[in-house]
Length: 123
Length: 417
Image (cartoon, rainbow over all chains, first blue to last red; front, side, top):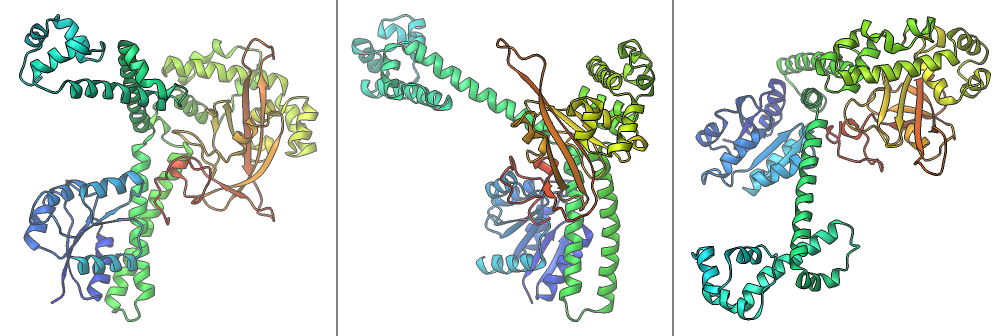
């Protein structure tokens, strides 16, 4: 069975597109659209890679990342942060909070696929 | 300090607590017996005690000097701190306070210029574009795709493109400041823009009686319910409008346009006026008189926009400074030299615009006062001919141009849009 990617994103058509390209590459993809309990879902599912959107209903991706990094069980989990805000301060914020990768929207499918492969290989 | 109360330490060192307080805050330099006595009471090395305080003071002075551009004698900071410890501490403290206040101003400015509607709209647009791009790539790049998936993706693209259309229209409407401008008004200038926008920048009352002072009838207009600052701005604007109308009656301008078209130099010559008032006048006349819709931006020597009459496709910034590539700002460095340029607004379609700009000194020149300047830029849609338009933006924050040497700050639009 392939490795699992947990996609925390609230935009249904982005979820569908990313799920499709990753599934075709042999990944198991589980998606979650709510920020409030996203960190619990990460701890419960123990995915190999997390793709985390910043603007989520209920709780910001930054907050979720901060919680994951403060927990020994998820401290080194590969997390790719997605955001429509690609300014330097956003990148700096992502780095400071411990994002493994930062990707600004709009991104290409090839870019997402390549990054997930790299993150899983590095883990 | 190491568990000893200030009063007790002062007693042991045989000085008053207030004098010890001055020493602690680097207002008094200590040495010799006093330094040894304090160091003894604290059970620390006298050298470390003196060095620590002095080093901090000297570092503070160096920081103050570097912040002010390095005019101070840096190599004599130690001597200055030694001879005038009180003044040195005061200077250092003031420099720290200035830096802290500057940071506060920067934070507040950023908060003011960061427009939540704009930010949310662009986020929505970028998210939708991401979904479309990703889905379209799948359809193009996946060789064998099941019919069910293909149909689903086509449906998604259709939904997203409709959503994108709606979001883009809302954003353009907002940037053009045409509809619902009242909902987000924040300044007297914006109140004035809304007032002028509602009147189409044209006032029949002034056209018919340019001699009447607008201050006598402004209370009959809707701006009377606005802020007093907005009313003051409106009176100033309408008085200028009245002076321009008296100098260039609408009938005369119409006749001149029939003869010379929009040849600005010929119109100025025929009407015997300078270009700046001519631009203002043309922008205040109905489209049927001028022959095309006219946009106008005027500014003072600081580059602050004073009149902002937008045109569909050529937006003017509602917050912050405009694009420095505009001929309006180039004209400020070459007063009295008219500039004509063909522009296209980056990221807002391929409609080219003809722009005319000129700057001039305002008031009478004399040796006692600083000269004031004003600049005006008139623009209208141009035909698509062989002239290659120069791409410009609205303002850096929402400009998609990459590799622009004039960029002041990163764009909200991330790379690749």
